[in-house]
Length: 518
Image (cartoon, rainbow, N blue to C red):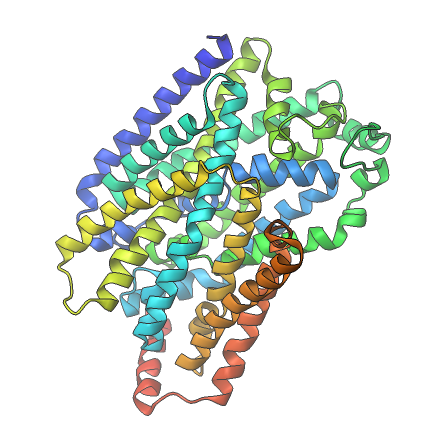
């Protein structure tokens, strides 16, 4: 065993013990559904802010997106991180956090499907939403496993990727099943601190590399860059230093919109607003979360933009997904300090992935146990039965995602964009309009969900028949953005052409009274 491997294993063991301990401590506070799913609606600003940020960014952001876009686009890719911080985080908190907290508390809604049922008085909408969540979040979760597994394989080449994915799955399952949302929220706080320290260390390390030469050297060296003759993705120095992405401007814009506005409709992100305790915590959480996302998002894409210089323009054997792992080994592979930093970075990427995994797993398991089964069952399950079922489904979802990730699907990172676009495209319209307008009808909400699903599904079918599914997956950012736009427009349009029953109108008026309360 090499020294880097030894340091990394020691760091992983310490980290795993800490996560398991938090899960055990949180067990006593998660014996009710409210405690297990939303922490009793009593989570503070720092914990919620870090939970939001760490759920936002996983290892796929570093290994997949930052590596791919930094390599192909260059410095302009940093706009994705800026968009994520401003649009995906700051604007989301300012517009939706307080309204979501107040309305879900008024409705006693614990999940997105639960919110849809009680806001629109529709069990059918609840069932549809629960099915969409469970089906489409499996590949999302699998992409996270895949990204992290490939990274650990770069440090431990003799160990199969599936072994690392299995270890990650088991560790996530232990503290999530034991402690529910409270355990995930407090582990997210620790994971967030690790992520900030790791990203700052990595930024310093890559900028100090001889091939980069600091921030000024980065721009100068990229401007002078020339692709190798055998480069499968040749580019120019002017492309890599173009602040607006050059020829990739359109592609850049779609990725900013998908990864930023997409958070507005993702249940695992919105769920953080259900749990925060009060308005004062939201004001603090907005600032904390935005700073966190700025550091992590912009830092990841800045690191990605240095990759061509550090690797001498030579794409690694593993392709795009191997760029960041290879950069890590090149920058941090030598010297005691470098080895220690490598261990920290590995924990950073493990933290980023596990925080996303736990949020996705909890969202998906609750969609079935709390939303789907009670909606289709003649007998309402007892709270104790729902608790047990939710814990078991957390295990089942972890297992399904692990199995899916081990199938060696080459477009799995594209599938993450696909899943992100489908889920957010279906929910963004009914969720946002339901918070702000009393005039939105049940039919309008249904139309929003179905239009988002049909937009992605129809485009995928047409492109797949003509060019294959791989080509459709490559177009996932455009399809996701289109689905979100269509859903957002269709909901008020269909609502204007339909009417609620008088009883529903009165019920909605009572619901909106929540904004006068605190």
